[in-house]
Image 1 (cartoon, helix red, strand yellow):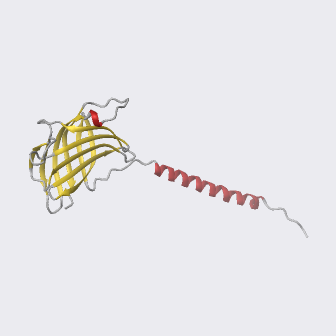
Image 2 (cartoon, helix red, strand yellow):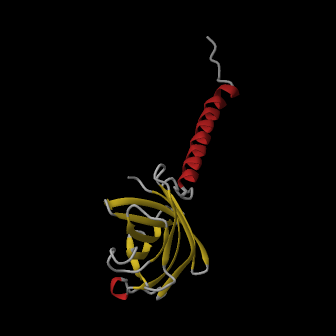
Image 3 (cartoon, one colour):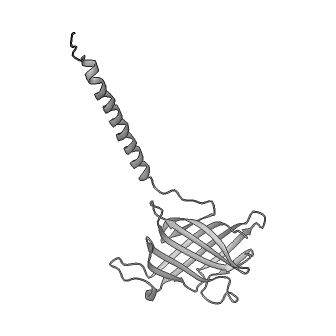
Length: 192
């Protein structure tokens, strides 16, 4: 009986198979990790708002809900590349929206078109700075159209917010005492 030594091909074949498997595992890990690092993509299916905030472009996801038969809550959320809300603007307006230009002031919804309008600067889920609307001619919402069939509301807005120092955190970062939004435009889906 002759004892054969294994050929060089037979010896290397399992190593090649292991190397191929290791390469596939490494490629899979790289693909998985790169997918995890993808930036958040805004979801504008329920609405979108754009404006100039303190002389810089601002884009936010929009949404709305009816709080009761006569009050519509509109929220605009600007998110960072991880999907965390940085800015949060809210408007409460009478429902159904009626075409026209209305001042934005804090107060009684029966007296003014909109009330309890707020702007919140956030760090993840923590509200860092809270702002209320300043009563002035600079703050308004102009309802351009409300389509009862599709539920889409189109409006323009401009607003000047003043920091509520009692409701804001004291931080090392100095947040401005006022914030302005100009040339604001929103398209929001109102679900009845």
